[in-house]
Image 1 (cartoon, rainbow, N blue to C red):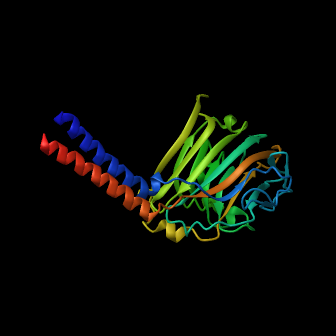
Image 2 (cartoon, rainbow, N blue to C red):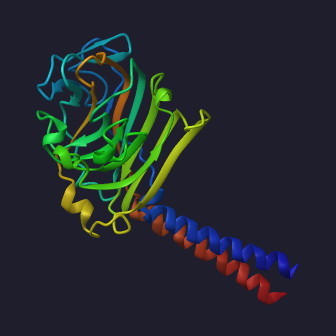
Image 3 (spheres, one colour):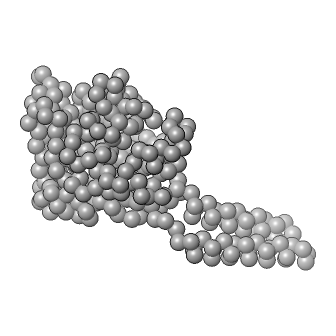
Length: 293
Protein backbone atom coordinates (compact mmCIF):
# COMPACT_ATOMS: atom_id res chain seq x y z
CA UNK A 1 0.00 0.00 0.00
CA UNK A 2 2.84 2.37 0.82
CA UNK A 3 4.37 1.89 -2.61
CA UNK A 4 1.10 2.71 -4.31
CA UNK A 5 0.58 5.86 -2.28
CA UNK A 6 4.17 6.88 -2.85
CA UNK A 7 3.76 6.43 -6.58
CA UNK A 8 0.57 8.45 -6.44
CA UNK A 9 2.34 11.30 -4.71
CA UNK A 10 5.14 11.20 -7.28
CA UNK A 11 2.69 11.16 -10.17
CA UNK A 12 0.73 14.02 -8.61
CA UNK A 13 3.92 16.06 -8.29
CA UNK A 14 4.77 15.25 -11.90
CA UNK A 15 1.29 16.30 -12.95
CA UNK A 16 1.72 19.60 -11.10
CA UNK A 17 5.01 20.19 -12.90
CA UNK A 18 3.37 19.41 -16.25
CA UNK A 19 0.54 21.87 -15.57
CA UNK A 20 2.92 24.69 -14.68
CA UNK A 21 5.33 23.90 -17.53
CA UNK A 22 2.69 23.55 -20.26
CA UNK A 23 1.16 26.85 -19.22
CA UNK A 24 4.40 28.80 -19.17
CA UNK A 25 6.61 27.32 -21.90
CA UNK A 26 6.20 28.82 -25.40
CA UNK A 27 7.47 25.61 -27.03
CA UNK A 28 4.38 23.83 -25.70
CA UNK A 29 1.95 26.63 -26.51
CA UNK A 30 -1.25 26.05 -28.45
CA UNK A 31 -1.45 28.21 -31.59
CA UNK A 32 -5.20 28.67 -31.65
CA UNK A 33 -5.73 32.41 -32.20
CA UNK A 34 -6.15 33.07 -35.94
CA UNK A 35 -4.43 36.20 -37.24
CA UNK A 36 -4.65 35.41 -40.97
CA UNK A 37 -6.34 32.47 -42.69
CA UNK A 38 -7.15 32.33 -46.40
CA UNK A 39 -8.33 29.20 -48.23
CA UNK A 40 -8.71 31.03 -51.55
CA UNK A 41 -12.31 29.93 -52.00
CA UNK A 42 -14.26 33.11 -52.77
CA UNK A 43 -12.95 33.83 -56.26
CA UNK A 44 -11.23 37.07 -55.27
CA UNK A 45 -7.51 36.97 -54.49
CA UNK A 46 -7.69 40.30 -52.69
CA UNK A 47 -10.25 39.20 -50.09
CA UNK A 48 -11.42 36.15 -48.18
CA UNK A 49 -11.13 34.14 -45.00
CA UNK A 50 -10.01 35.72 -41.75
CA UNK A 51 -8.02 38.88 -42.50
CA UNK A 52 -7.25 37.23 -45.82
CA UNK A 53 -6.55 38.75 -49.17
CA UNK A 54 -3.30 38.66 -51.16
CA UNK A 55 -1.63 40.71 -53.85
CA UNK A 56 0.70 39.55 -56.62
CA UNK A 57 4.28 40.86 -56.68
CA UNK A 58 7.41 39.99 -58.64
CA UNK A 59 11.10 40.74 -58.90
CA UNK A 60 10.47 42.64 -62.15
CA UNK A 61 12.31 40.11 -64.31
CA UNK A 62 9.38 38.67 -66.23
CA UNK A 63 5.63 38.81 -66.49
CA UNK A 64 4.25 36.86 -63.56
CA UNK A 65 0.57 36.69 -62.70
CA UNK A 66 -1.73 35.47 -59.93
CA UNK A 67 -5.42 34.60 -59.72
CA UNK A 68 -7.96 32.76 -57.58
CA UNK A 69 -10.56 30.21 -58.67
CA UNK A 70 -12.32 27.28 -57.03
CA UNK A 71 -10.35 26.69 -53.84
CA UNK A 72 -6.89 27.61 -55.10
CA UNK A 73 -4.67 30.61 -55.66
CA UNK A 74 -2.55 30.20 -58.79
CA UNK A 75 0.76 31.96 -59.33
CA UNK A 76 2.49 31.75 -62.73
CA UNK A 77 6.13 32.79 -63.11
CA UNK A 78 6.59 33.81 -66.73
CA UNK A 79 9.66 34.73 -68.75
CA UNK A 80 13.26 35.48 -67.91
CA UNK A 81 14.27 34.93 -64.31
CA UNK A 82 10.84 35.88 -63.07
CA UNK A 83 10.29 35.38 -59.34
CA UNK A 84 6.59 35.91 -58.65
CA UNK A 85 4.52 35.42 -55.55
CA UNK A 86 1.53 36.43 -53.48
CA UNK A 87 1.86 38.47 -50.29
CA UNK A 88 -0.79 39.17 -47.67
CA UNK A 89 -2.46 42.55 -47.92
CA UNK A 90 -3.03 42.59 -44.17
CA UNK A 91 -0.09 42.54 -41.79
CA UNK A 92 0.23 40.72 -38.48
CA UNK A 93 1.85 41.75 -35.21
CA UNK A 94 4.70 39.29 -34.65
CA UNK A 95 6.62 41.46 -32.18
CA UNK A 96 3.64 41.76 -29.86
CA UNK A 97 3.22 38.00 -29.34
CA UNK A 98 4.73 37.02 -26.00
CA UNK A 99 4.21 33.32 -26.80
CA UNK A 100 5.13 33.49 -30.48
CA UNK A 101 3.41 32.78 -33.79
CA UNK A 102 3.08 30.02 -36.37
CA UNK A 103 2.79 30.27 -40.17
CA UNK A 104 1.05 27.50 -42.13
CA UNK A 105 1.18 26.74 -45.84
CA UNK A 106 -0.64 24.15 -47.95
CA UNK A 107 0.81 23.91 -51.45
CA UNK A 108 -1.45 22.01 -53.83
CA UNK A 109 1.01 21.57 -56.72
CA UNK A 110 4.00 22.86 -58.67
CA UNK A 111 4.28 22.36 -62.43
CA UNK A 112 8.07 21.94 -62.28
CA UNK A 113 11.01 22.36 -59.91
CA UNK A 114 11.73 25.93 -58.81
CA UNK A 115 15.18 27.14 -59.88
CA UNK A 116 17.68 29.89 -59.05
CA UNK A 117 16.43 31.28 -55.72
CA UNK A 118 13.82 28.54 -55.46
CA UNK A 119 10.49 28.64 -53.67
CA UNK A 120 10.11 30.79 -50.54
CA UNK A 121 7.48 30.31 -47.83
CA UNK A 122 7.62 32.77 -44.97
CA UNK A 123 7.28 36.32 -43.72
CA UNK A 124 8.63 39.57 -45.07
CA UNK A 125 8.85 43.07 -43.63
CA UNK A 126 6.25 44.69 -45.88
CA UNK A 127 3.52 43.82 -48.37
CA UNK A 128 4.72 45.84 -51.34
CA UNK A 129 8.32 44.68 -51.98
CA UNK A 130 10.14 41.74 -53.50
CA UNK A 131 10.95 39.59 -50.46
CA UNK A 132 14.67 39.36 -51.27
CA UNK A 133 15.02 43.16 -51.02
CA UNK A 134 13.91 43.28 -47.37
CA UNK A 135 14.17 41.27 -44.14
CA UNK A 136 12.52 37.86 -44.36
CA UNK A 137 12.27 34.61 -42.39
CA UNK A 138 11.19 31.29 -43.81
CA UNK A 139 11.82 28.13 -45.77
CA UNK A 140 13.43 28.00 -49.22
CA UNK A 141 12.97 24.92 -51.41
CA UNK A 142 15.10 23.92 -54.42
CA UNK A 143 17.06 27.15 -54.37
CA UNK A 144 20.68 28.16 -54.77
CA UNK A 145 22.80 25.87 -52.58
CA UNK A 146 25.45 28.48 -51.87
CA UNK A 147 22.84 31.03 -50.78
CA UNK A 148 20.25 29.06 -48.81
CA UNK A 149 21.64 25.48 -48.55
CA UNK A 150 18.47 24.38 -50.33
CA UNK A 151 19.76 23.11 -53.66
CA UNK A 152 18.98 19.49 -52.84
CA UNK A 153 15.97 20.14 -50.64
CA UNK A 154 15.26 23.04 -48.28
CA UNK A 155 16.81 25.53 -45.91
CA UNK A 156 15.38 27.59 -43.05
CA UNK A 157 16.87 30.99 -42.34
CA UNK A 158 16.62 34.75 -42.20
CA UNK A 159 17.15 37.58 -44.67
CA UNK A 160 17.76 35.82 -47.98
CA UNK A 161 19.10 38.87 -49.82
CA UNK A 162 21.34 39.28 -52.86
CA UNK A 163 24.20 37.00 -53.80
CA UNK A 164 25.00 36.29 -50.15
CA UNK A 165 21.71 34.51 -49.45
CA UNK A 166 20.60 33.81 -45.89
CA UNK A 167 22.22 35.99 -43.24
CA UNK A 168 21.91 32.92 -41.01
CA UNK A 169 20.84 29.40 -42.01
CA UNK A 170 19.19 27.68 -39.05
CA UNK A 171 18.66 24.25 -40.61
CA UNK A 172 18.66 22.43 -43.95
CA UNK A 173 18.16 18.95 -45.38
CA UNK A 174 17.94 17.15 -48.70
CA UNK A 175 14.76 15.58 -50.02
CA UNK A 176 13.36 14.17 -53.26
CA UNK A 177 12.69 17.38 -55.17
CA UNK A 178 10.11 15.74 -57.43
CA UNK A 179 7.98 15.02 -54.34
CA UNK A 180 7.31 18.75 -54.05
CA UNK A 181 5.38 18.76 -57.31
CA UNK A 182 2.21 17.05 -56.08
CA UNK A 183 1.94 19.34 -53.08
CA UNK A 184 3.03 19.46 -49.45
CA UNK A 185 2.37 21.25 -46.18
CA UNK A 186 4.73 23.34 -44.08
CA UNK A 187 4.59 24.99 -40.65
CA UNK A 188 7.10 27.53 -39.38
CA UNK A 189 7.06 28.61 -35.75
CA UNK A 190 8.89 31.42 -33.98
CA UNK A 191 8.78 32.12 -30.25
CA UNK A 192 10.87 34.43 -28.07
CA UNK A 193 13.03 31.37 -27.31
CA UNK A 194 13.60 29.87 -30.76
CA UNK A 195 12.33 28.42 -34.03
CA UNK A 196 10.66 25.23 -35.24
CA UNK A 197 9.36 23.82 -38.51
CA UNK A 198 7.55 20.78 -39.88
CA UNK A 199 7.24 19.71 -43.53
CA UNK A 200 4.86 16.89 -44.51
CA UNK A 201 3.79 15.32 -47.80
CA UNK A 202 7.32 14.97 -49.20
CA UNK A 203 9.79 12.11 -49.69
CA UNK A 204 13.35 11.63 -48.53
CA UNK A 205 16.10 11.25 -51.13
CA UNK A 206 15.36 7.53 -51.32
CA UNK A 207 11.71 8.14 -52.25
CA UNK A 208 10.12 7.19 -48.91
CA UNK A 209 7.39 9.46 -47.44
CA UNK A 210 9.02 11.49 -44.68
CA UNK A 211 8.17 14.26 -42.24
CA UNK A 212 10.98 16.74 -41.79
CA UNK A 213 10.92 18.60 -38.48
CA UNK A 214 13.37 20.32 -36.18
CA UNK A 215 13.62 23.09 -33.59
CA UNK A 216 16.25 24.98 -31.63
CA UNK A 217 16.85 28.15 -29.66
CA UNK A 218 17.97 31.43 -31.18
CA UNK A 219 21.07 31.32 -28.97
CA UNK A 220 22.07 27.84 -30.15
CA UNK A 221 21.53 29.08 -33.72
CA UNK A 222 24.05 31.88 -33.31
CA UNK A 223 21.66 34.72 -32.53
CA UNK A 224 21.32 36.90 -29.44
CA UNK A 225 18.85 36.05 -26.71
CA UNK A 226 16.92 39.18 -27.75
CA UNK A 227 16.68 38.12 -31.41
CA UNK A 228 12.88 37.75 -31.45
CA UNK A 229 12.32 41.29 -30.15
CA UNK A 230 15.07 42.71 -32.36
CA UNK A 231 14.12 41.05 -35.66
CA UNK A 232 10.33 40.77 -35.81
CA UNK A 233 8.10 43.83 -35.88
CA UNK A 234 4.40 44.64 -35.52
CA UNK A 235 3.57 44.74 -39.24
CA UNK A 236 4.88 41.56 -40.86
CA UNK A 237 3.40 40.01 -44.01
CA UNK A 238 3.24 36.38 -45.11
CA UNK A 239 3.95 35.23 -48.64
CA UNK A 240 4.66 32.46 -51.16
CA UNK A 241 7.19 33.03 -53.97
CA UNK A 242 8.51 30.83 -56.82
CA UNK A 243 11.30 31.51 -59.33
CA UNK A 244 11.82 30.02 -62.79
CA UNK A 245 15.29 29.44 -64.19
CA UNK A 246 15.43 31.73 -67.21
CA UNK A 247 16.70 30.67 -70.61
CA UNK A 248 14.91 27.63 -71.98
CA UNK A 249 13.42 26.62 -68.65
CA UNK A 250 9.62 26.37 -68.44
CA UNK A 251 7.26 28.76 -66.74
CA UNK A 252 6.19 27.50 -63.31
CA UNK A 253 2.61 27.32 -62.09
CA UNK A 254 2.21 27.18 -58.31
CA UNK A 255 -1.20 26.34 -56.87
CA UNK A 256 -1.82 27.19 -53.22
CA UNK A 257 -4.62 25.83 -51.06
CA UNK A 258 -4.11 27.69 -47.78
CA UNK A 259 -1.88 30.28 -46.11
CA UNK A 260 -2.28 31.35 -42.50
CA UNK A 261 -0.81 32.79 -39.32
CA UNK A 262 -1.78 31.74 -35.83
CA UNK A 263 -0.83 33.25 -32.47
CA UNK A 264 -0.24 31.24 -29.32
CA UNK A 265 -2.95 31.66 -26.72
CA UNK A 266 -1.62 33.24 -23.53
CA UNK A 267 -2.73 31.19 -20.49
CA UNK A 268 -5.08 32.90 -18.05
CA UNK A 269 -3.17 33.70 -14.83
CA UNK A 270 -6.14 32.59 -12.77
CA UNK A 271 -6.09 29.16 -14.43
CA UNK A 272 -2.43 28.67 -13.61
CA UNK A 273 -3.03 29.57 -9.95
CA UNK A 274 -6.09 27.33 -9.62
CA UNK A 275 -4.45 24.26 -11.13
CA UNK A 276 -1.29 24.86 -9.14
CA UNK A 277 -3.33 24.98 -5.90
CA UNK A 278 -5.22 21.81 -6.85
CA UNK A 279 -1.98 20.01 -7.64
CA UNK A 280 -0.39 21.14 -4.37
CA UNK A 281 -3.48 20.04 -2.45
CA UNK A 282 -3.48 16.56 -4.00
CA UNK A 283 0.23 16.21 -3.37
CA UNK A 284 -0.35 17.12 0.30
CA UNK A 285 -3.13 14.53 0.64
CA UNK A 286 -0.87 11.85 -0.77
CA UNK A 287 1.88 12.80 1.65
CA UNK A 288 -0.42 12.73 4.72
CA UNK A 289 -1.88 9.35 3.77
CA UNK A 290 1.60 7.94 3.39
CA UNK A 291 2.57 9.25 6.88
CA UNK A 292 -0.51 7.62 8.47
CA UNK A 293 0.47 4.23 7.10
